[in-house]
Image 1: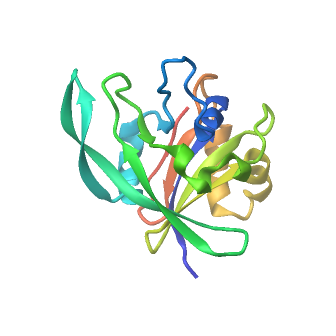
Image 2: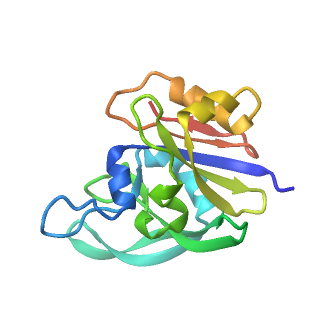
Amino acid sequence: MRNIARILYKEIVAGDLRKINAESNDADTGGGARDFRFGSYPNVAAIVQRMFPVQTQEPRRRNGALVPTTIYAGTFYWADSQGIVHSTPAFFEPPTDARASEGRIARVHEQPCLADSKMPPLSATNRVFVLLKQLDDDTVWPEYIDEQTIRNTASWNPITHQMLGCINAPRRQDHAVIGFYDFVNGGNYCSH
């Protein structure tokens, strides 16, 4: 049986749901980010680099010019309703000039494992989180988990136990909960 080596999680907010459904452009000009943003990127960078271990150079606009930028690549795994395992490439991009502290999982609308049909309903009384579980074989398995499940399983589940402490911590109203726990190295982080 494979063990969980580390977890990275982020609270899903209404804007994230629009990103999953590729409805995030609010203007007729097109665009609209379709990514899950992780604020305080320097605090989660080490975990991100373990989960997205392949570094590639891609041109990105920085300070008004296209420059080679390190993009982190990995693979997301999930099982369908028949138990067949699938995988897709996944990418984590570092902060931009405009958002200097936010890294992001790119193109979430192209990830079948992140489809809104896999997500519990969002509500003010039952928050939802995307959870990336990296197993000891280095595979990364995304899933959604709701606050009720976290609270109901925290007494016996080490993952939800770690998450509960973070989601219960006082925080600013306009900040999504972001955190990680590394069961191998013992590191952890919780945004407030």
